[in-house]
Length: 72
Image 1 (cartoon, rainbow, N blue to C red):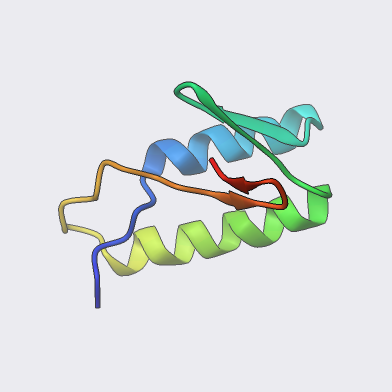
Image 2 (image 1 turned 180 degrees about the vertical axis):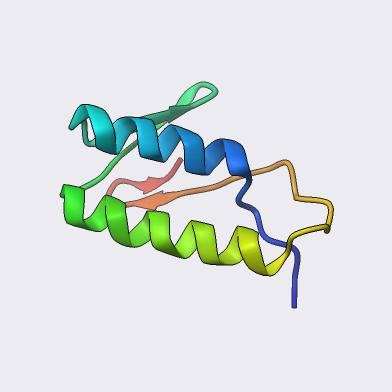
């Protein structure tokens, strides 16, 4: 299995956005806008599963999100 591009920091940022009710998450100079809180929760579950599955492995430092407007 390939190393994930997700980190615990991504999970924390997404959880904060969900808790605040915003549909946007900023990572560095890039911003991702989600369609709904439901979509954010689905992505959060996916990120948590991937990070849990790779515990103890060195995470990849790059992250890319695909949105309806292309890659961020």
